[in-house]
Amino acid sequence: MTTAREWLGRIETLALPRTVKVMNVCGGHERSIAMAGLRKALPGKVELVPGPGCPVCVCPEEAIYQSIRLALDEAVTLVTFGDMLRVPVNVPRGEVRSLEQARAAGADIVPIASPLEAVAVARSHPRSKVVFFAAGFETTTAPVAAMLVEGVPDNLSVLLAGRRTWPAVAMLLESEAPGFDALIAPGHVSTVMGPEEWEFVPHRHAIPSAVAGFTPESLLAALYSVLRQLIEGRCFLDNCYPELVRPGGNRTAQRQISDALEIVDASWRGIGTIAASGYALRAQLAAHDASRLYPSFEDAARKRAGQMPPGCDCARVVLGRIYPDQCALYGRACTPRNPIGPCMVSDEGACRIWWASGVREPRAAESAKSA
Ligand code: SF4
Image (cartoon, protein in one colour):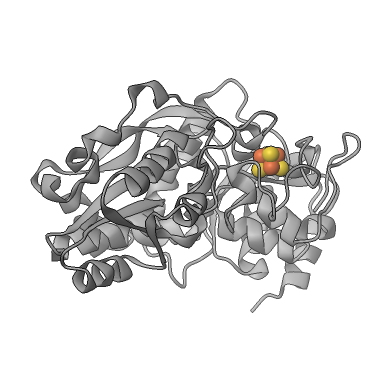
């Protein structure tokens, strides 16, 4: 097997005519890149840009607010993935601004790690109404769909904030300034949905692309592939994660998603509405759809896209417009202990990942590379 050092050696031999920006759209990729110190190891002409790869970061602010109000105002047990608990919403000072604070205020909120645990909580509390607040990309949404298809207890409903990754990349590519020259496509999403979903990137936009796994070796293989494509003037989707990414993806998971969910236009925090980028429960599952069961917590006045706390640059971080340490609050007002925006909360958020990798200060002046 080719080692990371060997891949780096191959990349160094490439004669890049200019600085090249390569975007990844996966928090797992960004974590591997940052923790392995790949940015510092690469030639100066290669920039790795983290893009919209964190589902917690793009979960609409109003969805989190609604889940907080549900937990506080309705007699329900709210279960959700642990990294949602600390994501802040924008409310006046003194009001409950996260699920963690709602829990401290007495709401019955249970952190879970999988949909199976949501079912277990509902089964163990048959007299309670249990709401599963489920935010995530395809890899998280697929098990939620499987849970619904297989049948859930009558007392379990789902408040779904599922998102599809490729429409966000398509939106970037259709903008005036996509901000990247090549794409490293997410391996885990491709495992479920099939690598074919990403073929539009080279075919329609002439952007070199490669699917990568999570090791430095796989990421560097994908990087080498897209850099070579750029130099040679070629464009295709290279599968650099063939161990798990197979043509067509996981048909069973896709069928379960299709059976339980429909594709809808969806709001992305800091970005706005992206066409066909979200999932909603199908009408036949209305009895388990929290958005239909608890209409009282919906507040039309809070239906606003792009809402970030004052000074927080998460929206531009998520879109790859700036690096995390280019936010003026990074490492000063905003740290994992005191997060201002969602990107510093989630393990998949670029700000949190950069902090964990040792980047502790905002960058002083414009420079090409950091972490
Ligand atoms: S450092 Fe904090 S405030 Fe700045 S973009 Fe990241 S999460 Fe938002």
